[in-house]
Amino acid sequence: MPKPEFVYVTYIETTPEKLWGALTSSEFSRRYWFGTELRSDRKVGSPFALVMNGTTTDVGEILEADPPRRLSYTFRHVLKLVKLTLTHQGFAEGSKLLDGISKGWPAILSSLKSLLESGTVLAIPVSALGIEGM
Amino acid sequence: MNIDHFKPATVYTIYIASTPEKVWQALTTTEFSRKYFFGNSVEVDLKVGGAFIVRTPDGALHISGEVIECAPPRRLSVTFNVNWPELIEKLGPTLVTYEIEAVGEAVRLTMTESHDRPLSDDILEGGRQGWPAILSSLKSVLETGAPLLIQMEPPKRMLAALKAMGIGAP
Image 1 (cartoon, chains in turn orange, yellow):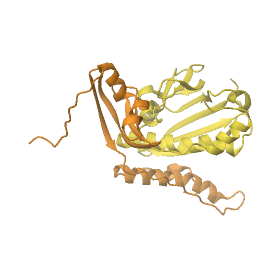
Image 2 (tube, helix red, strand yellow; image 1 turned 90 degrees about the vertical axis):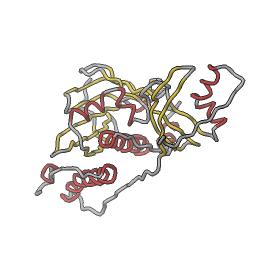
Image 3 (tube, one colour; image 1 turned 30 degrees about the horizontal axis):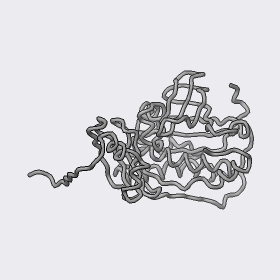
Image 4 (cartoon, chains in turn cyan, yellow; image 1 turned 180 degrees about the vertical axis):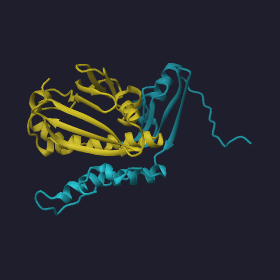
């Protein structure tokens, strides 16, 4: 069975070059696409993004670019992104603990990021972190 | 260029499930860098004295510098000067060093941004905001194939501090 898809055809009184420009220019797209800019350099393999009022909503890649006839790109919706800021404070001057946690936290949070994004933790031996006494 | 008098101002460490060679490639190749560097691209002539350039997505020169140390795949040190009028004259050059170490089955990437003079926290805000985003996205690309789409606020304190010094962002 064919996968569900959406196809739409319309006829526009213009030239292929002008239409290509309208489909690929961020200035132009903002005017007709609810304020969304199409960001790309229109080169095959380049990143492609939709930016709505300064917020990136979708990202993908240019698959085909044959101006002014054919343009193909992938895009997927950006669902969620979280900024995590960790602050650990209250150390005495010259604290050894501060040195240790400064080495420990980047490894722990890097592994947390890997686990959430790819499902796999990082295999880092604690002894490799260079923390005194570990 | 003598870098003895440069002092670290910002250090960021991240661990990546990858190999030192792949991390080196991510940092130094144009095509790869565009995936995680918010569409910016790195062009580097990998030899001491070689040119180091970062271009914005539209191809404009954004950062220029030269290679100070080049020891693939372990260590790369470059001058990293944002191409805004008067910036280098007033702030001096920026030095960026990447250290890449295999740690267990992962890689420790440490980025150190150094300067030859003390700079205010306001000025340093740009890098402190940018590096975690850039390198978090690099890690995601290497581990999952997909970059992060990070929408950051402009570094307002940095822009205000630069403006007060007569340095204009374009």
